[in-house]
Image (cartoon, rainbow, N blue to C red):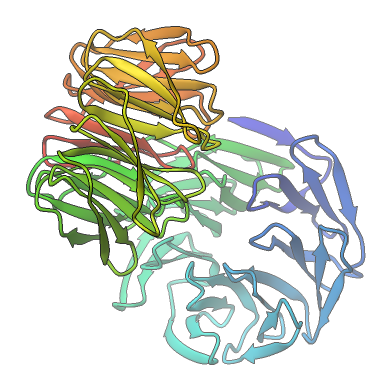
Length: 568
């Protein structure tokens, strides 16, 4: 935990969605402050004639919207554009919320009216119905509905585009803050009597829990939806299991009311801001891995989509399953005639390639499930990989060849140099190199344009997986010789990571390149620190592990194993 001090009583602060900026303002201040987190420089924004009540970044981090006691909303450009003033409210404007696409801004306050402003034209339409001042606003993550709470004791859910009230409840206390779960199934309400209310407004189910004992002033879900944090008037911070809807612990440390809680964009930590002039940053607890069941035979591979919202799995039941990471709900794609060994998402996340022992590669449309079949290999296909630009697809086969396909036309180029079957391939981050490995115990680095290759020799067993570091200066390889080797791409020098007690089946770099995950037939996952070579062991699978994969933000690790399960 780190504590950051400030000269005044911080009323509110926000991280920009891109994580580069922090905005904050003091109680009763007419000035916004924006801190560049990379260099610590602070920029002040003046213009309001009344105390600032709320401020928000636009989703693309190019605008700040601020609400004031001067009855106006201001839109501040962070790219040098003009400041716009949005006028129309008849009272203090105290709450703001952007839609996820940034095209609309909701504002509300003491005049009991919610205004929806077009970010492009500054035109507005109104939602009316509350008979008291509006206390909180929250858009669902798909922007389909808007939730509002009021001092009239009600919480309402609106089809805001058409101005239609969809649902309304009266919770046990006034709701000071609202938050939708990332999958939009639940709306959380923090009330002035310390009750946490979980409202499934689709089914009309309400679960009320009284645990915090003081007025709940702020709420925030973790990006993965597993946790909820709540800030209290007495200085407490509640940490909740959002899925089980129960409090895990009550955190103490602030000497004044907690004005706001929020998760860091990657979800690894959360912050609480208090009127005691401090901000506290807390580490989120670790969770047991989530078990995804549905495959009827061993799961051979698991891979995250580029946006981290989807997990694809495949295996010996000849089926591809597409899982929603937040809800765990799957879709199934079928078409292959034999087991599927590897999967790869296209860089834009719209297509999924699958390699099968039926000698084919399939390109699946993620939205529709339709597939295109690529034929040419004369034996089982072990691996597939998209180039970073998405204009090439590589496949590796038992027939000893690597094929470079044009995903649009289906035409291909053949690379031959390995002696025996080729088991694994990976493109460098710049797309200029292709690494490969196989039964001949050699790692090869290919020049994609010319087809020339050079060998890296050091393994004494079948090379099962190769992976480039995010910078492209290292290649990691795993092998049946129980080892992981880190190769310097330029010099060819090798560093051995030893610790597995059986064949190593898979290896993967974290997105920041600081860690390497490996797993295999000893049923363990090892997380290696690249700099020191030290490792952490993860247990849980009951059979050999075929594959590991980090989520794009590095906060999650997925594994696929012979016990018919995938774990996150």
